[in-house]
Length: 116
View 1 (tube, rainbow, N blue to C red):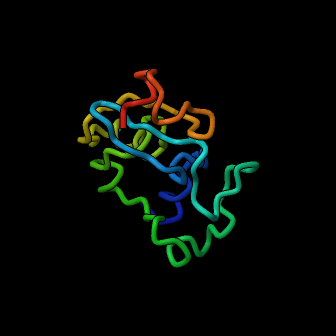
View 2: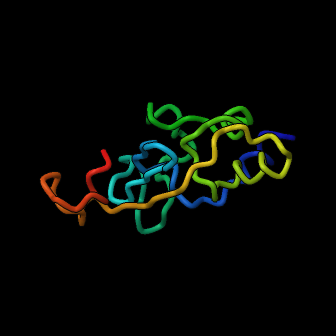
């Protein structure tokens, strides 16, 4: 498969541009925290062609990452590809999307927000 065909698999959802943490069997993605080059209105990278040079956080999506990376959302097109091929070996995790700017403070007694 050519590099261009591989790249075209992406749904351009932008979830990979957000801060993530693995917590137990959950993949928690903070929808209020994203890469400096992410445009939240378009959900696109503003420096897409140079993203690997401009941002150390941005990692090229390879077949190995699609197969093994635990920090990819289940809805990621590359994860879907790996599953379809029977090549997804990372542990299945439940996706949890949060908004850190609207979460209660760390002092809150609400256990749902005290997972970190």
